[in-house]
Length: 235
Image (cartoon, rainbow, N blue to C red):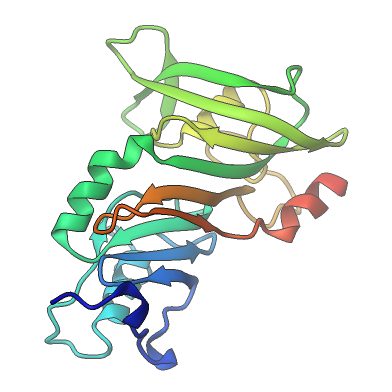
């Protein structure tokens, strides 16, 4: 018989992963707040310093023979901070990925400059070149539909703080859309320009609404927007 979610006990503090704050955990899902600079999944150059590696180690509680593991549902760019939802079994993964498009995701970003329209939806078709860089195309057959809703919350002469609704989840979508509007995300070395004094990519996954894969309960998770974002706009 399955234990209730409330009875789930988190592993001891010594197994808590660095660079990740655990927001919620039960027998089906693990929700974390990832710091900027940490990969979601390991690559050829970085094997151990990723959210996936660290959280697999975490759920095994120090037991290398444990069969406990986590499953990737979605990803955040290395330099984007904020919420990532992982599954703890195959059924949960399949359910979350099937329903993912219907879940509401909110981001915050600081972009360079000011946008003429203070609220709107950016729509394009995104394609990827051989250097793994995304760009917009007009032909639906050559790209995948990407829609980004946004609202300007605060602006100065140099920067704007945006609240963003991610209406589709394409690779680098937010970064590409605002770069192509002439307002790249602050600190974006790939789609913007190198800026002195910028500490990090100013993009944060702040909240997500999901249906729990087992109980079907509506759940909302939030990760506080870095104070750096407001200070950057005010600088």
